[in-house]
Image 1 (cartoon, rainbow, N blue to C red):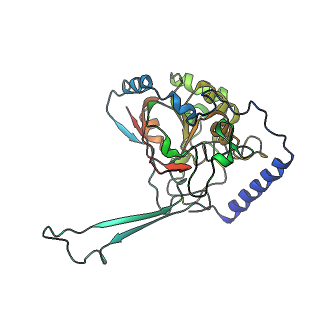
Image 2: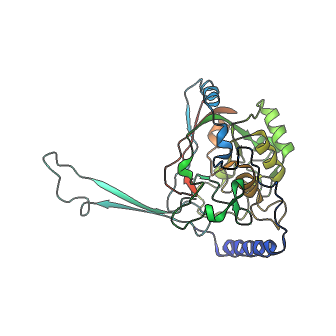
Image 3: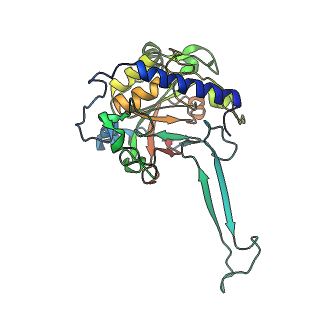
Length: 318
């Protein structure tokens, strides 16, 4: 489903405001784009997905319980407009036509017409840029093409097998679900991790639980705001070297933003500045209900050439 008319109008005003701001904002400082992996790097913090991290993650599997972190995606899945989903199932005649061969086979096939950034998803570096430049200070002319990204396509990502950490922010703030506009600062994240007895390390995937998804289960419209990651929290986790940050919300970051004039500032910081991937609409409530704080995180990204995003179903294994 798409946003309501009011939400669309709000989004248009925000985008228009961004355009005005761009006209008067000075060019970004040269040090905005962090180039820690060299000027030709395209993977960002995925470079931290090492054999050692995979081995570390495997040692966390003690019960063999598998948690699916992806939600079911379909026509009624709430989506940021104008994104939408449609599936067409193709059958021989009406499904009761002539049987095939001596084994009397029947078959079905399907076609999906969909926006990729819908449901549980990964945002790649081609999703958000700054002043027409993307991760590693790459100009748009080297990235953007109407029939698939020239660079930063999510098809090029390696498999994710690493340590995962989930922080229960409802426990930290003492509210479930958290109200929209609740920002997770550096201090909040440090305190939540300390209270759960976990340490966030380089190469980890960090998930933030707000209770938002569970509370809005069955709702076909997006709310105009959400709890989420704030500016200082984003800087903090990125500087720790995490590979990806996810949440049980549709945009990961707090909405409205801490500075109402800014549009998705956390997306810009993580994707453009630092090279940290974003995971949205992650199913975290089962992990939290079982008291899980760390786990083995596994994700194979679909190999759709030149894709900006990816519909995903990561696995947490404990």
